[in-house]
Image (cartoon, rainbow, N blue to C red; front, side, top):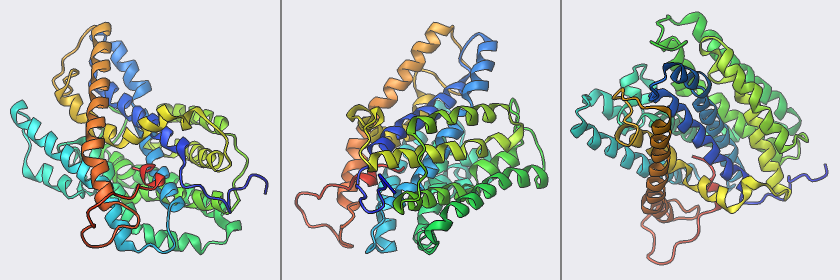
Length: 388
């Protein structure tokens, strides 16, 4: 197959790194819509309708990307224990800082929270609990790390199983995983009790089972693994990167229009899978992109910290999420800009003060099991900065 990267696999996938920030920005916009900060109530309603589902698109992208990049960067001589250590070094220190920061900021703000609500989040098991205060904890977005932790624990086995699939059958298995994604809301809407969440179109149990429950999101992760194998074995179809990005538009519209939990995940899985795989294929064969430029790559490297800190800033920064305060359109937009800028600054600090030092010390692919020998750290391979 011409242009096939099956035998030449570059370590870096800069387009995917650049896309990470766009996905984090979608989550930011979704949470912006939840603040309902405009004095114009119709504007609040419209913003909530058309921006509220963007977060599910961003999270689905991250879950597919995670499976793809972990497979792309997997080493044949790696051991599960070393892999798990690198993953924990990647996510847990940043999580702990934002978890603790959120808890400390809650106290002077007078927000009541019990140990039963914030302790599960410390250990990243809170997405398993079908109670919103527990899932939200001290930093609402950390539920996705609870899901990622399950991905990481299962990845060595999942990769081994996928590698046993013959290349000509990889697409068929990707189709099976897609059917599983579609089946999740069908089963949730059919079997679980309905108790509508105030101001939404979702039943709480359906929302939890489709969106938060780790086992329900596992299929997206496996799709990412299968897609990486498809690209690596030269089975990728010639889908242009721009066409793949445009395919997200109808998927997004379905997330807005479909009733109940049907629009949460399933409509965007195929478009986002195309985006991830086409971006990786283009990088592998050397096709340039603005997403692979240094500004986007740099923002992509900050995206994990940006994602982890932005809701803490939302509650305790210029938009005062949770207080019910509202402003005219101009002041509200200025406050949103301040929220974004402050989040970006804090994400830079968190990335350089916590994420990078820990990864250099404990997250190096070839790091020994015991304490590292003092001296210059080996650079972290680029794919370790691609997934969240």
